[in-house]
Amino acid sequence: MDRTVTVRGTYTPFLLHVAWRMAPWRLIFAPLVPFAMLAYILRLIPRSRLKEINQHLMIGGRVSRAALAPHIESYADHVMAHNIRRDALERIAHDRAEGYRLVLATASYRLYVEAIARRTGFDDVIATDHLGQDVEYVRAKIAGENCYDAAKLAMIRSWMAGQGIERDHAHIRAYSDHVSDAPMLEFADEPYAANPHPPLAAMAKERGWGRFDWS
Image (tube, rainbow, N blue to C red; front, side, top):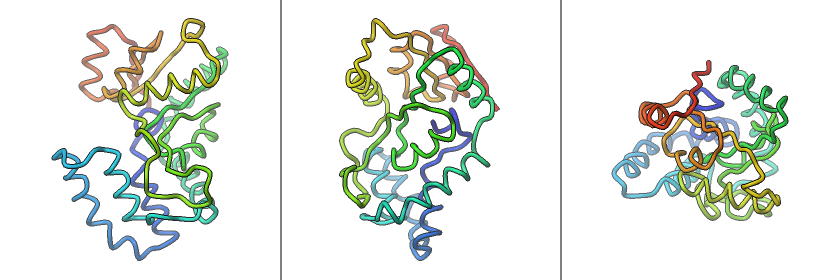
């Protein structure tokens, strides 16, 4: 989703959006976020732990889902107004018109992705989940895998199995901006590099994949 359907990343802006509206005092922790990022860059913590730390800093380790709900919706509205690729929306509509089932697979949290997915026309979401999806509060803890790289493909396969979709009987189009999605793109029948960063652009050119540069 991030930088493929959207122009910019969505996770940190989501945390700031919620913090400002629910507990503005938490913004005093914002200067600590770059230190967590540095720890990730230095490979002291994995990407999943980085996300947990940032969430704990900006919105807390345990937050009511009911209290979060209106801010999730207002954030999704903000994304649609200020951080969406209009050409991507046209491609989504094009694929729907051709009869495709539209699935948004993203490392971002299901917590807010589903609201964006509804607005952009997706049928299903495969995303990073919080521990305790069935409880009334959100914990700053990831359930299972971060939906990223090879784990994303594993989660796609698991979702397909749960839906009764056999790989040999499906024709898959996949779009991504980042080389970390190479496993997913290689899995697809039609892989597309969409707004690719340089490593993915080079890979797509080498492997003959399609390319889109959406605005």
